[in-house]
Amino acid sequence: MSLTPTLILAYVFAIFIAYLMGSIPFAILVSRLFGLQDPRHFGSGNPGATNVLRSGNKKAAILTLIGDAFKGWLAVFITSQFFVQDNLSISLVAVAAFLGHVYSIFLGFKGGKGVATGIGVLLGLDPSLALILIVIWLLVALLFKYSSLAALVAAASAPFLYLTLNFSSPSFSSEIFVAIAFISLFLIYKHKKNIHNLLIGKESKIGQKKK
Image (cartoon, rainbow, N blue to C red; front, side):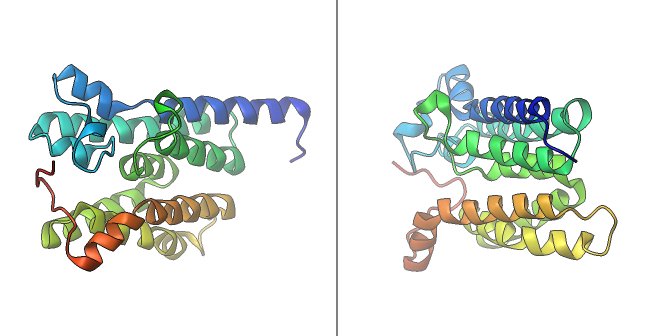
């Protein structure tokens, strides 16, 4: 497939829209809706569902989780169904939506760690893989009570599981594999402080309030 000026413009437009969608800060919007403190001002300071849960409002945390996952899925779905329908564009859009959450234009290019949005993106790219990773996250979270550890295990597993599930299949895409690997590595990088806290025994457990 040759990259014509029109196709390049379509790529740029799709990536930009995906980034804007990913930038929507559901943690802050939902917190305002419920009259809660801005999640950037307590706990880990991370505008994500886990930190919203530290407010004690489970409904707000669930809505944040759903919103962050939905925006990632929607960006990939719109591109794959109605816009530029090739694996390269879909992969670029997936990464753009994820980075939009991590570096939100609405928050001065700051944001969350991208776990929920990463799962949403994967639901768009490979639903079977995403569901397996959700199960892995839940099992680790239930066993050890650490959201960060669950996210790290799921992120580290994602590229290998994609290869296992798809390598010999006609549906395998090197572009999608690279996108998944990038998102996984970036998620691990964003959890570097959590890794340190886990190693020294100071990581907060799920639902634990942290001032």
